[in-house]
Image (cartoon, protein in one colour):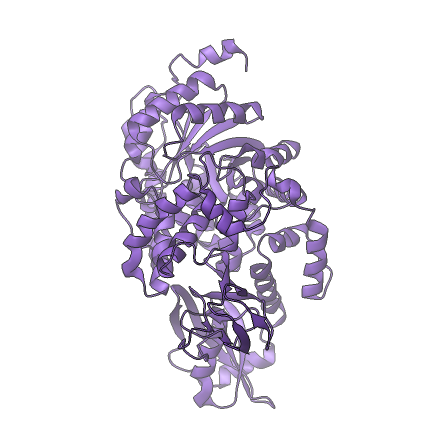
Length: 625
Ligand code: MN
């Protein structure tokens, strides 16, 4: 980092441009709601490994959550399986600093173990960022990555506001280099970086930074190819692209386009087109399987430049609003997002800040009153538990959100006690057996409820395989038509297949139904009940039909959006005051408090923890005393 080595960077970069392929991570996170399964990666993995990429991004970001929550896949196993068939190209992952791949800050011991296991399983480069660019939140993950032999790629989030400019970004990059980064990434998660500003920013970075500079952007506004070309002219070392059939729109620009643009030029990467074409053909077919997860907002969407909302966030908001039959209020929510962002001190709109701001903006619109309902995450954010944004926070709203609570000024994770031992105990208790695999404990710490669901599924798949006896039954019994169908509930599609029918017994006749490939046993008393029973079982996975009364009274407490009950805060007969917290609801991966609008007594409780709930249903009845 001596000044003489820095001067070398002022000579033009003549090295071939390097590419990182994002198809296994950001591309399907952007286009297919992160649903790409390992089984659809493995057949093409070897070809991608040999295509000449410098790095392959295949883990982290939302892939961990999605694997456990929706795909019922062990995310740790994904690294191992891919490493077997992709031994040549370094693996890279996206890590949200102290948030790892989750949505809150975890204790240092969790961060350390998580990174240890990721590297042990085959991760090579960790792209580490903090949503607020608060570098205190990167300290532990940097240290752990170095300790366990991984490469640190320090990333800062690029965003646009009256408080952000290229000098601030260069300063951030310098500090990231001083903290030990092996490379620096400009993370333009929303696709806001214009070609000419990219040129200016990259040129300034190359003048000040010794380690390689990576550029990550999204093609949402249609500018990204031009942005990369100007960044290449300014000397950027590595750019992120996806294979063409998974590229463009909210994803990265297509690799083939950039390869062709650079052909014969001084920085020609000399990647062969034939294998790239084969990979593109493969994903043209595979992508169709996931069409249910494609967003309505595909193609070029210049609104991103107006609203400065990442593409993934737009499609998320659209999905949430359509669940509420409120898609017509999209424009209001898009207008509210920048206002909430300003109240919050202009955080870059990236996970988890994008979810916190997006959910709060949605609530502000749907409840008809700004900050009438404040999510727990909003109040934690305003307390300083996520760190410090670059802009000032709206003090009036801060006061409303945290009341007499204390503002946090230290590194937020300093306030978190070690979590691993407690989590292991909890998990062992929940599963009723010893858990020796630290990866399972980590999965549980990150997503407790989702992880338990996942472990129970795994257990069933092994223990409840149909016995030979049952297989005989399948052979004898008539199959029900249709035996295979898709059920769509709240935008989530379930593959349902009737696998077979067992021998009738005391409790009825067992029917074996596969939901998303996982075996469920359903006991039914007669054939006539087969369809409703199967439906009931599916519903219990994904929704639950409403058996609760409709809201009709001022004291009827409901949820502002579809979600799950985390906590019932009141007891029958309890006296409550207007504004008191009645329930905690989890929706859109956020927890929100639900309050009573009136003073009174709790007359009825229609929910318990874990129940799925919808707006307009009465969850708790408060009546004036
Ligand atoms: Mn991205």
